[in-house]
Amino acid sequence: MLAQNYYTGLIEAGCDEAGRGCLAGAVYAAAVILPEDYHNSMLNDSKQLTSKRRYALREEIEKDAVAWAVGTVSPEEIDGINILNASILAMHRALDSLKIRPEAIIIDGNRFKQYRNLPHTTIVKGDGKYLSIAAASILAKTYRDDYMDKIAQEYPQYDWTSNKGYPTKKHRTAIREFGITPYHRKTFNLLGDGQLWLDF
Image 1 (cartoon, helix red, strand yellow):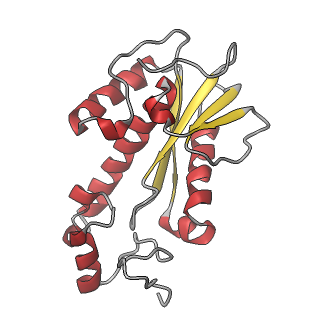
Image 2 (cartoon, helix red, strand yellow):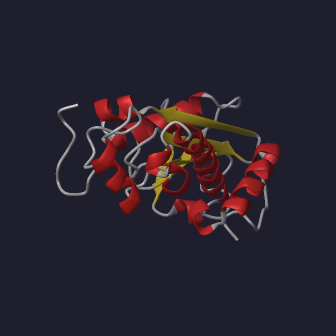
């Protein structure tokens, strides 16, 4: 069973992102505030769950959460500020959209930037340790998957419905054959051979 809270006596939001290591598409992040004494034995790191279970849990999270929100940062913005800053910005945007203001934040990973002077703690593999971070990982992952499935209809040759923008062999082969799309992150090593698409 995952832990309920890191901070005691504060309204705590858990944050996580999805799509940081992708070659294409926006990065997504979610922020979730769960009720005090919340229990859900099925919640876990989204990567440990099947797609069907993630979507079922998304419905439960959205129904049960005190507040939840999703934030995004576009590929163009990622190229302008780098993926680490973009991931943190997506989390800040999710926090901005919460209908209830948190008093503290816990974040999956080891990097974050101060948000509105609130206390915060980064937790490595936090999506497998705290309920609210696990919930945020599920929302970020499923909403980003929905987005990738949608833009895949425009560019089916890149197999985004399967790889979700990650650097699979099929995805990199399609880049070599067809070039890049407006959804690709141009500052990334798209072909995996040390070459960046800096001339676009």
